[in-house]
Length: 241
Image 1 (tube, rainbow, N blue to C red):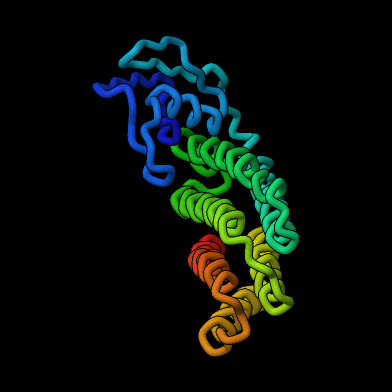
Image 2 (cartoon, rainbow, N blue to C red):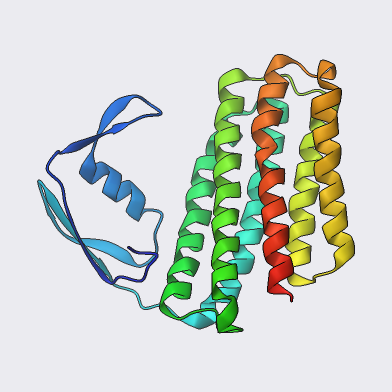
């Protein structure tokens, strides 16, 4: 509802808790609402009861902020992925834990941009609003994958070999190339990103003996980024038609 552009949101619930499937325990609904609000900009709780909660946007949005925030999303995404690779390589649990906060910051900006698109549209070309919205959705998915892959790295603590590090760096290279492509479209960059994806698949499918079981678990999870980048390429081509 926030992303759709609503200014006043009333929530009502019969149960006071909801089951959290990943951690396998009940969580208070109000705790969940507070947690979600930490990932949104300009909206606050103005009234809270045992079985209801009223939310209201208190900060007006400016369409002039959209392009600045969109570029900031790219910068933060690249930084987050660098932290993941560094944390996984060094088995630095503290650094890997920071991915959660980085995820929340980026999610806040993505949601803000989606809200602007739904309320105002894409100022540069209204007909391309849906394409930009889809690009933001995919960027949000990339952030989620990096966060979850970092969580997996903390759990299984793989010893990162040089071969694994090369593949992880190739994903990072593809992300950076996509950022450059978004702001300066050219067909050569599209081809280079596709080649990075195909090389990654070949290494995993036909040279899996080079990697430990833990490394393969990590690399298979991480490969989802390459698949999403493929979707982003299609959307960006459409954006530049």
